[in-house]
Amino acid sequence: MISTARVTPTPDQEQAALAWLSLLHDQPSSGDQATFSRWLRADSAHVEAYSQAQVLWELSEVPASKLADEEALALQGYLNAMNRAKRSSGRRWSGALAMAACLLLMVSIGAGWQPGRWVDDFGADYVTAPGEVKTVTLADQTQVTLDADSAIAVDFSHGERHIQLRRGAGFFNVTHTGKSFVVEAGSGEARVLGTQFEVRLQPAGAEVTVLSGRVGVAPSKTGTQQMLTAGQQVAYADGIADELHAVDSESRLAWRDGWLNYYKTPMADVVKDLARYYPGRILLLNDELGARRVSGSFPSKDPQAVLNALQAVLGFEQHNVLGRVVVLR
Image 1 (cartoon, rainbow, N blue to C red):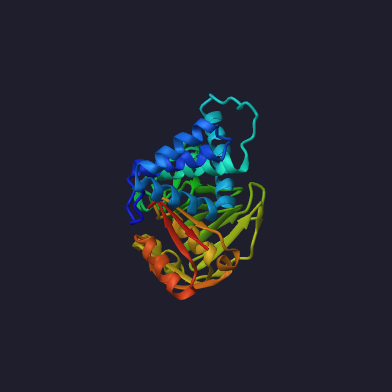
Image 2 (cartoon, rainbow, N blue to C red; image 1 turned 90 degrees about the vertical axis):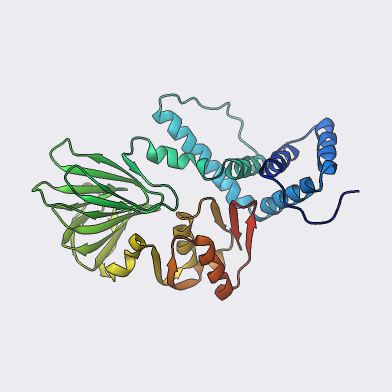
């Protein structure tokens, strides 16, 4: 008889459960099923580990399949960049197998398995990990504070100071040298001589926020430049700029001091921010919840505490599975 008392599986048992979950959803043989049955009966911790794996499976089929496709695409891009690319055999994963493989890789390897980051980091000069905020000093004495999970490439060799924002966000305290300082992000760029401003990548473009001085922002290489001053912000996407507007720059840039400030911000955007500080994955499965508005000031160093506080107010379900994946619904 298997004990019904709740036990805590070891990491190896959790990984084995996910491996079995993947195998059993990919046309297992009768021998595989018999071996699985023996494994399951051998230890009550195996039952608990497999139960937890099934919970994650049931909760996250759609986003996990999407993540699997994205990671496979990113990995292919990384291999292309390394001149080692070779198209796979062409057999497309089934939805269930893609999900299981993604979950297995997400959980067993953790935050390290994210080929999207490998692509961004390939050729980057400065990188921050999830949860890490770091300030670096460039050759011209400009200081750049990188938000968590960010990457930049630096090139001062072509008559201007050029930065490519490859992931995340950076706050730039630019030294005046007489040469233009350009931050390329998405389709557009921000251009200054010396000032303080932030550039943050968005899904289809970027957002620029000015703390002091003047910043020229163009939504594309040939787009019209808008001039921003202190306390102003503009976003652009797909080569088209929104109208600039006034913001509380100090509040927006409080992440440099470990705080995330929101005013009537969609929950989906808050979760995206928290994901940069969480070492595993946060999956939001409820569109209605994602549209709800959040206001408040939260410490960035403890995303789980922020989720707990938001859960108390908004009343959503939260599942922490295998210690590395948080599912919200």
